[in-house]
Length: 326
Image (cartoon, rainbow, N blue to C red; front, side, top):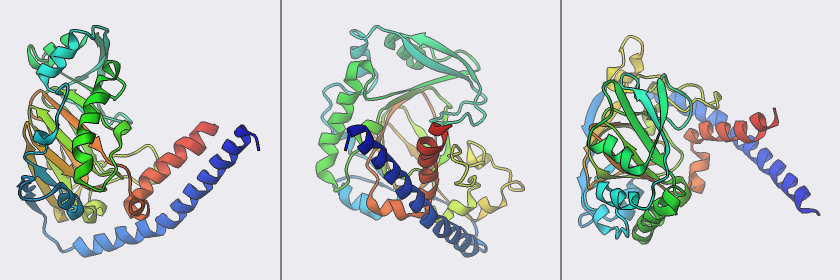
């Protein structure tokens, strides 16, 4: 069988398998949603603080097996960076990386950081800056009044130097857990004060390593997902809740179910790492100019049958087998 034909057969088989998974997950998701609504109907909302622990107190393996958010105070100390992803380390790289790159500039009253969609963010322009100029804007002068700026560097950026930083984390973390790091989906994020990642949930487990500055974090358990105003999982490009990007500002008359949830809150400071379990809804706001590393682990087999996986399954199916064939 020719290679092209094998590829087509494999592609069709993958599509059929994904469609079948969506068919299985749909009633599971609907049942989970209904049960969650009933279970929390008489529950008063509350707010709890995400606990902080050191690796001397609890191993990374046990933290991740616990499947609840935790801030690790000393994980970053275990990473031996050849080029540390902080201001000084990026300044050192800037001496040999003088090519400009695109930097998104948003209005500060709609400063939402996005992977997909627009979420109401108002893109003012895209500036071409060198790494030195970008760091000056972040940590010296700050953005202009009424503006905010961010950039997510992928592993290929800065001639692969970002990939080297991620490799250093992989080397430190992989022996501490049985999870498989997803190097290609990790990166280095640099943003100005006030930039918000709106409430969403992911199918993978993550670590958020805070290298500079601090962030406000709010998280909700998967058991609260039915009360968080997420759009239908069958809207394949809608990954986000319809709550305000800062969910604490939600109007209780417009989002009454939010009153039945438990909000897990924390301030993540430089040198600390947030463990984000799969399918936990989370939003993050930069409290000052900062650098962080969203580090991901691969999706586990058990995650594919989680009701929360219906949304990413529909999204992947739409991208690969619907939109691409239009």
